[in-house]
Image (cartoon, rainbow, N blue to C red; front, side, top):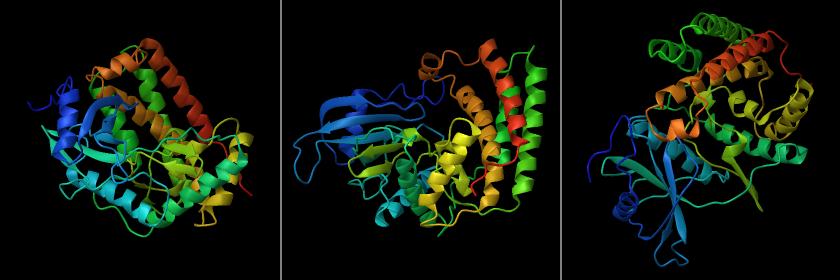
Length: 337
């Protein structure tokens, strides 16, 4: 097998045979059946195994990491955090130890991990008891996350989620020339408002987070919720793992947040100053997301999946979105009392 192409088509060499051979090299023998699962950043497959038994499951999930995104040390720190949570009986899906003795292996230039297959449905976030239940487990994740610090994983901050993505989009010519003045002005005002939010919040504690704790990364089964995909775990304020569970009008979000915190604070106290950061973190995510799409645009999967990106209408909508966020960040924070 040749080395994977790092640009243009980073997964061009990841054929079905390569996937099966990679698993075989790590001690898992597939029976030839593969199912590609929904993932754009990485490539993820359900792989059925030969000779399922009490000791060997019928299938596993193989995750092939996007080349050059994370270092080995950063991936292994992600794995260690997930496995630490499992040891504390927090319901997360953590990588399995391979025949190599590690949770991370490499084959034909592709790094990969293997996970147990866990099914489930999306949580019903309109249900108060569901929000409380999720809040309890996020509180437990954060109680563990606060006990130590990441050494390799980066932080969620204004520089990496705001300044750098803005500079990347401008320097690589993604913003149309006729919209560039309006977009540049809107981003500058938005980042100024983000900084004011951080100033109002004051110093808040940074801890190890899931980092991308939206409903799509929480699966529900008969035992309740379990958390998947720690690929974006970073250090940051606790509210980063809470705000993506909120939606709707202000009154709706306040109701939802109270329910989440009712469960959360059974395991960890929430600092109400972090409420000043909700709209700031939302704004940073919007800017970062634009640059994420731009950085991946040479991957053939992205133009096919996101055909609306980089159109005139797309950037017009982003300008309006930023202006709405500027107004939202000037409003008082959500009330939880």
